Amino acid sequence: METKSTTTEQNDAINVSELFYALLAKCWMIIAAMIVCGGLAFAYSKFFISPKYTASCMLFVLNRNSENSLTSSDISASNALLKDYENLAGSHAVIDSVRKDLGLEADPANPDKASYTYEELKNEITVSVPQDSRMLVVSVTDQNANNSKQLADAVSERLVTSIVEIMKTEAVIVDHAVLPKSPSSPNVKKNTIIGAAFGFLLAAAFVVIRFLTDDTIKTDADVEKHLHVPVLGTIPLDESESTKRRRSEYRADMQRAKKLYSGKEGK
Image (tube, rainbow, N blue to C red; front, side):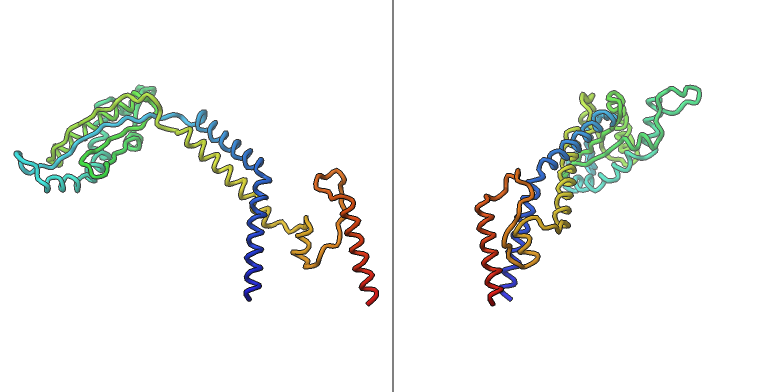
């Protein structure tokens, strides 16, 4: 049992070694796949995806029970209500007011006018809450940099008004939106790296699968491994191969084969 286990472990080690050399032999194909997939991801991100710009405002929200002091219960209450503020930012009360204030409602008489539906504007708004903070970050992502800044400011101002009026809580804009100078998406560098990684995995998987499913006999060791018989001699098929053996080695193999054959006949 121990001998069989040792033999199995040796065969596994040989298989891993052979797999490594199979991957090494096909490194040119793996590199080519990485270049092609990375190049396609770069071209698609650069020329086929419309860039989008993100502008953000920072709000400070606090629930104060006492006008003269700030207690730990005030801070805990503010943190518990942060999720409500996020939902309020996506409400009709806020978004429809922004659409009306900025004149973004659809006008049948002027079809060329820039307009946003409730769903379109809601999908552009993102409200995040930094960890262990009483701040709200209101972000708007739009294909136009100026629109993203104006919308972020308008949404934040309307949200502050709604928080004060509806939830009776203190809120103030700490930082207004800044005009974005560069697009926030797509991330061309990140997409290119992901494309190259996908090409590597695809090519490596192809080599591994081909290696595991290949049961052809290529070397002397394969004969002994699969047929369990010793190799007495080999005949080269191509004299130009760099791995061909010297003629003297083949003569020695033939002499050993003759001796073995004559010994069997004598018995």
